[in-house]
Length: 152
Image (tube, rainbow, N blue to C red):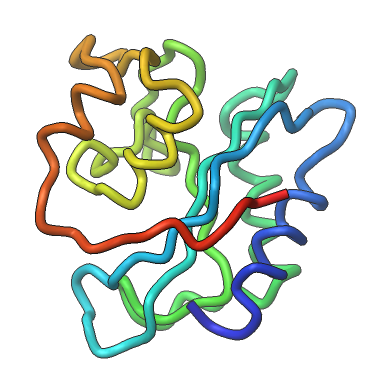
């Protein structure tokens, strides 16, 4: 929610897209109200589907490197930032380490995550609950968002 939000998202996609991490498709852009720390500007969110040969921790390191390149500073939990890239799902894998938890531990309660995921693939199933993205989205309410445009 800091700076040229759309440019940061496009740049992140460009930096991540590579032979071992191939961008397959992206959702629309969604402008969403902040959760937690509410005294800040709205966020621009999207989901992207990648195909990868990277192992989960390699993927996480790649993502963290891109975040740093784009000026990410972790100063305040849920606070303002230039970019925040999460691994929401990794195929049907369930991963729990000190560094990485997949599926993302809070994705099921966040409309700003479920709306773009359901747009990309409404029948995609959560490997933990077995529920589809469309089913999970139908249970989330109260979070304001609107389509802000197409991502590419």
